[in-house]
Image (cartoon, rainbow, N blue to C red; front, side, top):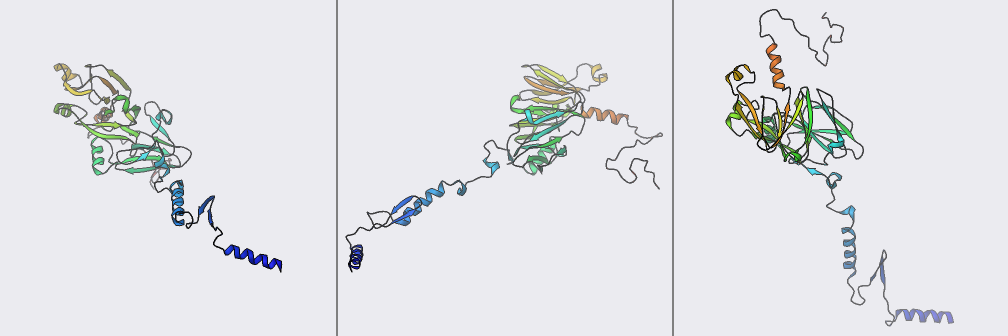
Amino acid sequence: MSSNIASRRFLSAARSPSVSRRPRLVTGTTSITHPLQNGAKPQSCILFEQHRRYYSNSPTNNSNSLTPQAQDAGALTSSDGVSGRPINFDVAAKIEGNESQIVTVTLEPNQVLRAESGAMMFMTDGVEMNTTTGGGLSTGFQRMLTGQNFFISDYVYNRPTGKGQVALGTDFPSKIVRLNVAEYGGKITCQKGALLCASHTIDIEMAFTKNFSAGFFGSEGFVLQALSGQGDVFVKAGGTLIRKDLEEGEDLRISGGSLVAFSNGVDFDVQMMKGVKNTLFGGEGLFVTTLTGPGTVWIQGQPPQRMIGEIARRVPSGGGMMFGVPVGGGGGGEGGDGDGGEEQ
């Protein structure tokens, strides 16, 4: 009997208004006061505020999260929108060969190498090639006027780890020289078609001769190739390559077609060859190219045009008995297995 009376008294006291009831909601380690006590905020407002703070600080739910390539702080974007990490050519590039050279470039993840289309010798597994106009039709036509192809190829190593390689060769037996554009005033002017490959942030533009005589009588023509931007370029030259550093006002006269490139600040012009005998019998023609410093000039010892002209001059123009010179077809045709390929 006494136990039943004690139980009824306990239940009656629990229902009494004088007993303070402060139910609490527990979310994680945070205790939330009931909204009816002490003027506390409504429970929904408190929960919303906690969720807002949690998700705004969560890196996995950030709406502005970028791809790994875009998150790379060292990535650079070219004028046509190609993004990639710059290449340290001091350790990544290797020029091999003597009179006919090639260049091999080692690519790390997200690095981009821009090269003349058709110059690739090989590329290892993991390297991808993307051929574009490099900025639209107008950019492609502009590049054609400078002696390059309408299309240009970008090589990128897209794997997260490891390295890839790209080897590039020239279309004519040539020496290859690497030049840093920033070291030569931010712009290097070359003969048409001199560029082999470069950093993806290098721009190829047209450079016009300053006067009519230089374009009409000079062997380089009216349009030259201007390379500007951030990074390095690899330029090809026929035969022996010579570098000349010119002082302020110093002149250098070179034969037509021997010019490879010159740095920003060098003045380009043509002058008439002095002396009638020099003009008629000297073999250099009526005009010579004149370069005035300050700046640096690169000269080639065997211009491709000169070699092609000498070969063409020795080809018989017709008449007389001629013997055909066999030329290998490369891929091998019918009967081309090396034992004569006699027709049945």
